[in-house]
Image (cartoon, rainbow, N blue to C red; front, side, top):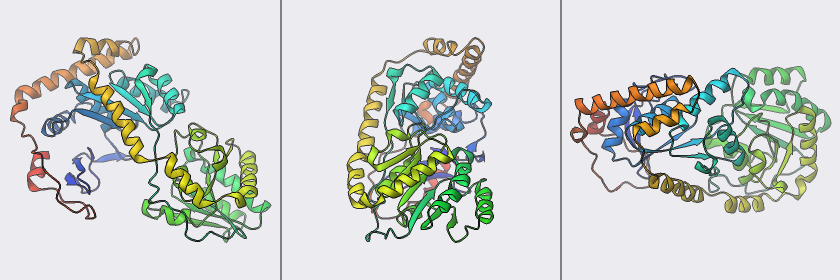
Length: 407
């Protein structure tokens, strides 16, 4: 279940039998819907009952739709799992606000998943969730999609690839200082930068200032389907993130046979073995030295061998198996009544705890009114069906019945 994307709303049947509800709520900033607390309750309730849902799994702390869906699911008595994909600080205003929101959501969550051990430690500290209820399930990479180039590239010219959103958090300002110094030290080094964002202007200004138009290529936004073609055109992948819980981009680069140079932040040191990555502090001087070290060990790197190792290290089937284990723990956990749940919200703070309890009591009353207005047995349950379309076909369109049911 997600919000509407452009004019795409309703129900879609995707390849492989995946059913997606695009609820008719438009995002207003950063692909987030306007927080309404209770506005999504009727449609969330209808979907959960129609689809005979057993468990609700929400992703990403920035998603307002995720927080509201988990809140409504717990009010209705469903077991919920939350996956946190990000790291947050404790000092700035934005982080303080998000930490309080996360504490509200996780106060009543059944189980939680983090993508790295560093992320787990961060989530436990921010939310106060018991560590035994937080599982670590890393991300993975589709190695069948990210393969090395058929012919090994010549090392007469070293090409360093950057594929990232050009924003402050991804270390775009570090690139502005690192690239000119590396180009000054190595005459045979060239950069390819894929990505877009507010910091792109700074990179273009740097290129103009140092006269590096022929050595720094700016591709702009790169669709995910074209990422591999960009990666296999280079020898080294550069990640300059200032904070990162895991970083799938590193996996994709390693699967394509690139040696990785990355900042030593968050969960990045957990991602790859030491011989597949060169780590540096998020400092321009240290990053330049790390790139220098990577260039010297580049002749020892075998892209195909690195790809084969990635196939064994990271696999989405393993991620699915480990996620199902978390689901089993959640489903087997004991049920709690409203008073027991409210006691967990009260522990969130002297004033915040009371506010959270008030929010949940109102949600419970609204849910009860909805049950009186439209009893559960009056909501049509979706019949089970066997998928008959070819796996290679594109997405199936939603039916008129499903459109009416969602509206």
